[in-house]
Length: 310
Image (tube, rainbow, N blue to C red):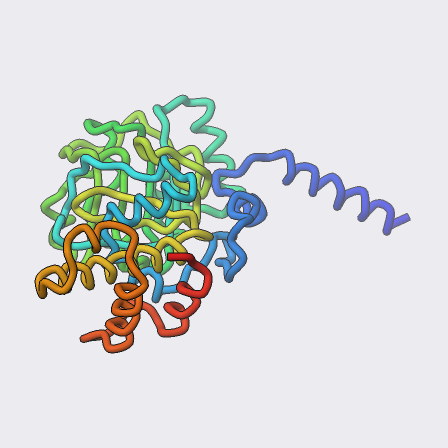
């Protein structure tokens, strides 16, 4: 009898959990969203793209990155026209998403109740909740519907917390306050739509680690972001490595082509069109004696040429 009661209680509790929608997405939901990723994951379900990939991605041009995603059918991954804290630095990282909306009291009450159930901090505003989840290598990406005045998601206090946890910065389709204070945080960077001295008001957090829209880009938890002064691109985790090596090889082809044109070895039409077997062989030999360190490993390069037709 006791076993039956315990079984019924377990089913009832599971039903409550299944029915309730949390503020933070469950690991199972994040895994379902990113099912094409086959590698390691964080406990929250997000794909764990390697630090090495993140570092190499900083050297990829926005055009090459965008072209690689376009060729895979991902046309809605770029957003431009940003106010940038330090536009001479590139930032890459694994995305933690947050969605903000105009405040509605009954929904705000529900969010706060869910926050208690999820053991989230009750002191301060809900805009600190995504920050509590950050790990090194994460980038906090939030949609606050472009609100500037009274829409400032962070100031320098939260900025310091973000950088101490992630060693990165933020990308907000919205605003921040105290740009001067944020600029004093060594290493911290921000891509925002504006800034204002006002405090956040009439804006509420509604979800963490769910799909969001950043301008014309669709962003998923666990995406990899490349942010430069030219704009921001979000990569599905399962595609980032393939797009990266394609972009790296394209850059090497361009470097080789420019060199040979300066030397006068080939005519422009020969370099700009389908390469002859002689140019392909010349390029491979040049790679084998590359004057510096190749961005990828020899194994990655060999596999690239095995799987692709020129």
